Image 1 (spheres, one colour):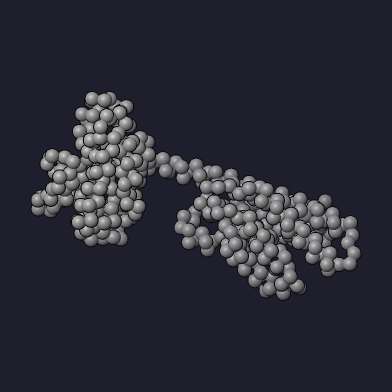
Image 2 (cartoon, rainbow, N blue to C red):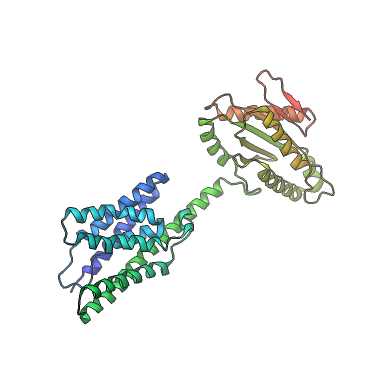
Length: 362
């Protein structure tokens, strides 16, 4: 009994499982761009090294890893993945290696990349099983046409081998796609859990933990400004209208601030009725206009349940002196400036001053 096909399939699945686990360790995209062609090319070479019995109706599955690279990552990764196995075939002095490289490596790379979808790049989309079957079917047609042109007579054994190869390769690709999609489900769940751990449940803004991760990386390389924002008289609002209305006010204020901050800046809920912004501006004049813009967005908005607009915010601002400043000190300074704004009549912004002289603006 010939177990060649089963041996090839099991080896292919084992190699794909190893590649998926290695991929999960590659958190840097540049490493992944290099590792995918290397791992795919190495897997193709391993498939070529497996023995084939002389009477086997199957050919090796060296094209299968190339197909997966094309489906998942597109034309560039799939074409780069052909370099290693093509080079190996050349070094082995295989007869007609060029024709075989085109048929079993280059064509699978091109055809599979045609079925690559842009949404796969995010990692949040699953590869369609029908695309795998389509690639295998097209490759079978190309293989049959090339054989018909080269050979004058075709035996029934030839047609049987092509049919069995289509079924076998299709099932192998299906197994690989299923493995990838199943592993991707786990990856997506992990990312969602990580996102939820860094997201405020009430406002759906990032929480302080998520803010600190980004702010720490940013402050290392450049100067920044920290803006602490507090909703004025929030406790009185809560006592008057109840906690449900208070929660709704926080939600609306958070979303309003989120749409008002500049695209390159980052806002999070600090806690209670306070929000925090990391701004890439460091010029006081620009920050003054920015703070006024945020104040007016809140003041002019009619919140849910309010008969008229009039909710206000106070803002404290600190500016780093140089890249690499201590983030917690900047936050503490912005908090001190916020305190000055609150004590000076609210609905205003203040800059932190080292000599405790604060600039105030109503």
